[in-house]
Length: 116
Image 1 (cartoon, one colour):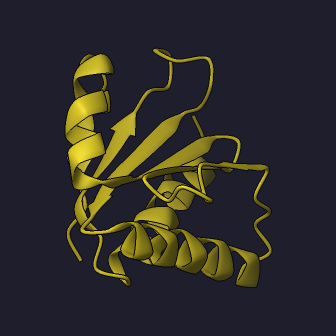
Image 2 (cartoon, helix red, strand yellow; image 1 turned 45 degrees about the vertical axis):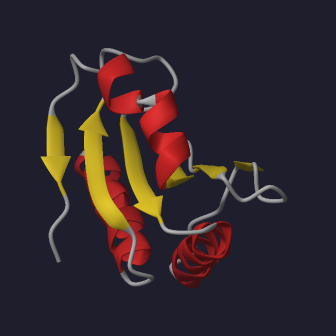
């Protein structure tokens, strides 16, 4: 895992925080998952807020020249996944986050709570 991947996870968390995302967690899944080094998970109150958070993340990272590789779930807006390669952002409506419980699924991963 590189320092740049850790910094990218922080950029994602910060961009989510700017749109009032709640309960932002950064899971270090390096060595646990072959998909990414970090999963960043956050909650929103509504599908409108989920989309606003995802839009802000895309905009802020694009401003830094960081390219989004893949996006899932935007039309429904209940769980949007933004794939930045080494970091994958999960933006959930609260009840879907509780249902899927990714924190439990990746329970072996070290977790850091994002605080502004």
